[in-house]
Length: 332
Image (tube, rainbow, N blue to C red):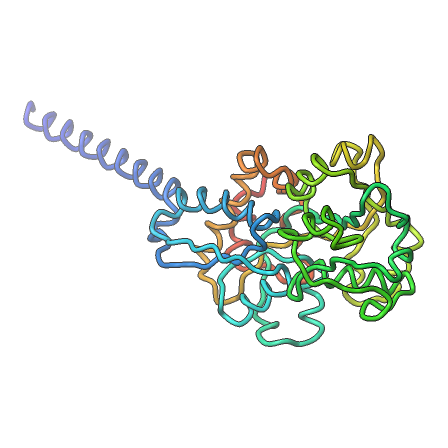
């Protein structure tokens, strides 16, 4: 009798242990990423000019990626901007990048190399088009740039694309009615300050540190880009549909704006990769971008505007499968 009870008790202990093991196994399955090995290897992230928002954002994101992807070596590579970034990723010279939606649509519409391989991961923050002049300048609207020395961004930048389109919409020939100066945000502020430029265009998140620092030491003004001009810009169709009317808040650049909001043009930025990017790596990269928003946003204000509710809308690019996997995992 005692032996039977002992055998019964032993079976119950074994059954209890088995149940606990099942529960622990399920818990580990839930906590670990489906038992998949952590991503490994090396990736290149193409950013932008050294003092621009892309580069500052990339520098801070790299730290969070290193924490979340300890077996992945991350290399940042500066660039002229969106157009060069897209070409690098599409042709395999970089793995991830940031680019504006209008530049992406232009690359797709032109059928450039690797265009069909491009995929989106996150809709990030918006870029605001900033036309900067000295405070005493007689430039009050884009058409007033006729005959002026105008910084239009580097050839591979997104700002070059929109600057040329804005001037064309204002009735100017960007190649002949102004003296175009190919320069980036790392040099244009100093050139304006030293009277080597009469104006410069910039497309970036708010505030851009280079413009902020210029406004702190030199009297500048932001030229408004009014609704009629924006309608003319959008009338071109195609990739111009990604431009929208926006307003730079009065406190974006306090010294430059003197407590006045400024009408302008905005365009969305997208985190970009290709269909060849590993799904697990892309899922982890996307997760880090979303999770790091508040921390990075304390140093790069534009990052605060990354929003999980809109991040999935990466038009004009289809969503990468790894990114889609992440959004499904956080869906309420």
